[in-house]
Length: 182
Image (cartoon, rainbow, N blue to C red; front, side, top):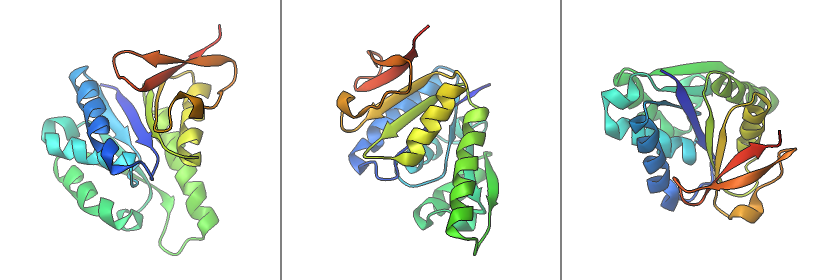
């Protein structure tokens, strides 16, 4: 089975957690598993949604982190441990305790590339600039994967990703999919 990467801003408002959970449920109901990044915000909301659904939701889902679990945000560690205890896997990156900021950032970008490379598409919840989230979205577009974005600030906050346009999705109100020009 394939997984869909559910990612987004670390600063995603907590009021968006139910919407992330709804998307996770919808994807699971369609036969997909979930891949995520193990960070705060959208990633944590997706992780909590998976854990709350138990073993069947977690078994074939995966979380990619930039290094050891000890480097994950403290509020994510409990959920990552529960996720693993429910039969899931956490893929660790190259960062290590004491690495430099530039090494850690490099590991974050590598984590995002690995997450997208194994996915069948990306759903991103974006608030503010969200450089890492937009990096992930652009990488998915370059790979020709389907991309759906929920912009907290609305359609006007969506950047152009090259030749194409954003189109609203009726199945997930407030979301837009990238439609490349042919």
